[in-house]
Structure formats: structure tokens, C-alpha cells
Image 1 (tube, helix red, strand yellow):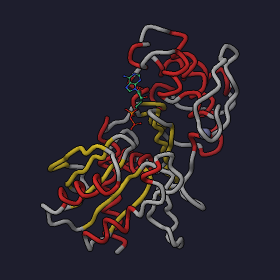
Image 2 (tube, helix red, strand yellow; image 1 turned 180 degrees about the vertical axis):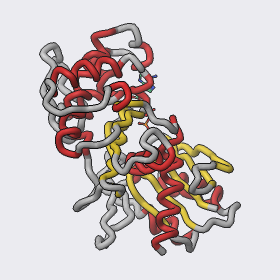
Image 3 (spheres, protein in one colour; image 1 turned 180 degrees about the horizontal axis):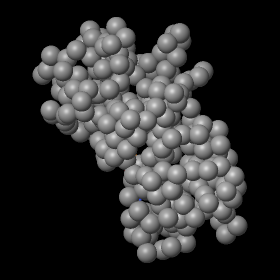
Length: 287
Ligand code: ADP
Ligand code: ZN
């Protein structure tokens, strides 16, 4: 049996299951401070006899195996979690192999193994929620360099009617600063799910996401693009993205039909937790 943690800024999802994606038991724990949250995580997993644990975490995180701070959360705005030694804390409680990667890399792994990109050796998983992040599978492997990619913080061209200054604490008007859930709410003065009928809101979100997808397509040439996260529950954003992306690419690269190419997660909300089970499975195999 495998354990999995999908560690988010508002909640932790913990599950036990197997690499087929079957989840036997699952709980949600609020993200407060590490001592409190981790005590509950450990108590949950102590009920089971686990072979390995996979962690898909909010970031940025240190995924460099050579680093002295491997397995930690690094420069998060969540002060209590800054420099938190995530892998070490789990290792101290369970002496099993531990897989550790970003939440979006976990989701990409889940989707390429069991979801919308099943059977492919390449995909991109993007979340548009409290933040924007993406994970990529390239030639069958999670893309990693010095560290994990941070594709949510790219620079985009401003919408001509957008006066909003942007919400990213590091870059103000990067993609995340202009198009994540909190930016939408602050710009329009309403919760995202109350803005459903406001076409200009979603056209602007589509305008920004299409630019990001153009860059990702030109650089990575993914075989499938999967868009998850709370904001993407507004399904009317998809046609806005297709429209803007078509205009931007202007026929330069040939792509599949956009409604088949840029899709919602095949695993729905479970992409991240199933991917985390798979990170655990990978760690077990690499032991
Ligand atoms: P997180 O990113 O924290 O894991 P979510 O992916 O649910 O969680 O993203 C939360 C953000 O998405 C919030 O800013 C919220 O306002 C926005 N959001 C959630 N659901 C919807 C919805 N149905 N329509 C528009 N925005 C939404
Ligand atoms: Zn940024």
C-alpha cells in the first residue's frame, strides 16, 4: 500500500491507495502551521502499513537531490512553512522511500499515467487557482533542471483594457499576478464564482492564459495540455483560450483540434492525489 500527500496552501489531502490510482481512504486536513498539520498527517498514516509515501507539494520546493536542503519548502509567502523540512519530517516518522515533487508535477504524472494524457509520453498540466503553476512530462519524464519549472510567473502582454496592477508579491503583473483567482477577484471586486455571466472577465483570463500556452507550446511542444484548478471550473474560459491562441499562433504551428488538445483533467480533482501516489510508487521502484 502507498501513502500520498497533496499539500496545498489551504488544505492537505492525504490518501492511501495503489499505483493503479485506486484510493482506499482519504482525508483532508487544514493547512495551519507545520507542527499541527503534520501531526495530523502522521496520525493518519500511522494506521496503515505503508511501503512508500509520495508528496506533491505547493512550492517553491527544493527537489535537487544534491542539495543540503533537499525536501524542504523554500521561499513561500506562507511564513510558517518557509524552510520547512517536509521530507525529513515524514522520514523521521516512517522509514520508507519518499517521493517528493511539486503539486503540479504530481498532477502531470497522474494525468499522463491514468488521465487525459494516458498513453502519451508528453503533457503539460497547468493549475489556475490561488496561484498558477505547471508541471511537464517530457519524453516520459517529469521536467526538471536546476529545480522544478515555475511556469506561472512568466511575463505576458497586457490586455489593452486592463488597468489592474497585478497581485504577484514578487513580479506584480506576471501571469499569476494577472490571471489567478485572487487577481480576478481583486480586479473585478467579486468572488470568481459570482462573475459567471461577465464575459469580459473570462475573455481577459483567456487572453492571458492563451499567451502562456503559446509560449509553452513553442518551447515544449507538449502532446496534450490539461488545465485544472478552481478558475478552470468556469468552462466558458476554454473557448476564450482557443480563440486567442488561434489568433496568436496565426497558423504557425500545426496543432490538433484545440478542443481535443487543451482539456480539463481526466482525473478531475483527483489528479494531484493520484499523482502523489505515483510519486510514492516511483520512489519505491528507485529504492
Ligand atoms: P488552490 O489553488 O488553493 O489549491 P483552487 O484550485 O480551488 O485551490 O483555487 C482557488 C481559487 O480559485 C480561488 O481564488 C477561488 O476564488 C477560485 N475559484 C474556485 N472555484 C471557482 C469557480 N467555480 N469559479 C471561479 N473561480 C473559482
Ligand atoms: Zn510572479
